[in-house]
Amino acid sequence: MIYNFFTKKFLILLMILLWVIPVNLFAIGAGTAVPGLPFGGFVIFTLPCTCSANLWIWFAPLSPLPLPKTGALVYQPGYTTLYGDFAIGIPATWHLGSYVPAAPQVCWQYVGTACVLMPNYGLMNKVGTGLP
Image 1 (tube, one colour):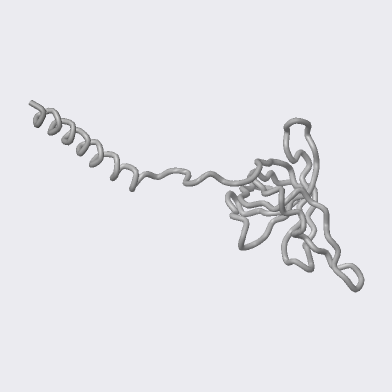
Image 2 (spheres, helix red, strand yellow):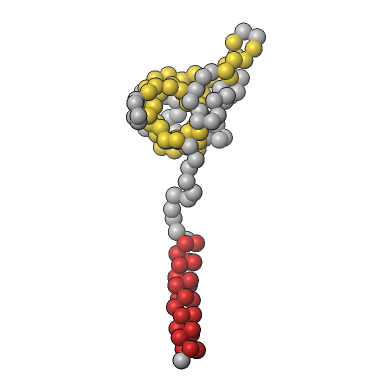
């Protein structure tokens, strides 16, 4: 009686594992969660960061909550994943993505004989663009 009870439990567990493991191995999903805060906005203008080789992009409505605000984010080639129509930083295009707010010192602009820091909200880690 006990042998039959454990055999049934073992077979049920084995069937569940044989079904769950292949489904999870070949599942197409979003992957891991993206670190950072979401943003979306309309590009007003873009400045190239001459000392740090990236783009400083000013957005009109950067985020809708709690209050709409404007501000700049930095696009770093090689770090930021670009999706959509690949129209990064082109004025009059919509951008949507996420950014890391703890990286304000990422855009340096050459002024005279030295490089100065351009103020920004952070570094984009994923961004998708619309058509101009």
